[in-house]
Image 1 (cartoon, rainbow, N blue to C red):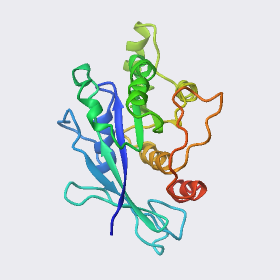
Image 2: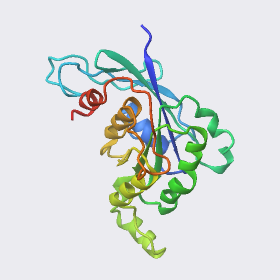
Image 3: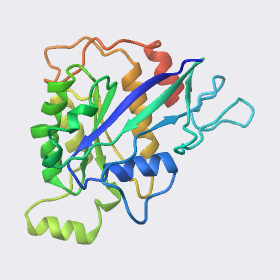
Image 4: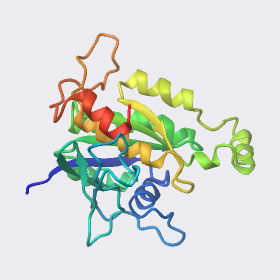
Length: 244
């Protein structure tokens, strides 16, 4: 059986935790030692029970539950009666890769535009660099803004360092506001270290890729997607993935 693939590309400044985000999600373990500059792309395949509201767990009667991917045994997502493979693609954020990075963009279904909540500079680059770059190469493709490293938001050393520069960590409301201004699908945040809301990031990515985009309004941000191809009914997508 041919399995449809949802291509999810992760972009953002260097050192904001993109690779840790992917490794923690796909292995269920935070990398404690060496983290490669570019994450090895691999397909996360997930199964969802079709008879209960949970994507990753049920009462033990309803069917297959999420397993975590390995290089040799990728996981598969089942939404409704159709399996999907979530292909995850890491990118290098440094300027040295500006000409090579877009080579990974064609046929992308959804982008995760990442910044660290402890780095106001990386947050501003979402607006100044990453949304313009993604929109230039892939106009109309849905984007989520992802705040990483939330476990460090209230760290005293981090706050003191930012305070000396007359700055503070990025708040959730700041991310929500930027998502609205730019026309992102939404803002989500997580910690790869503690896995707080980590799964939610990728659940929302699946929803964004499968749901048809609403008709663009005059108030929508400059990069709001419009007319994305629906794969299955939008309400069914959210219900099956997020349990709404």
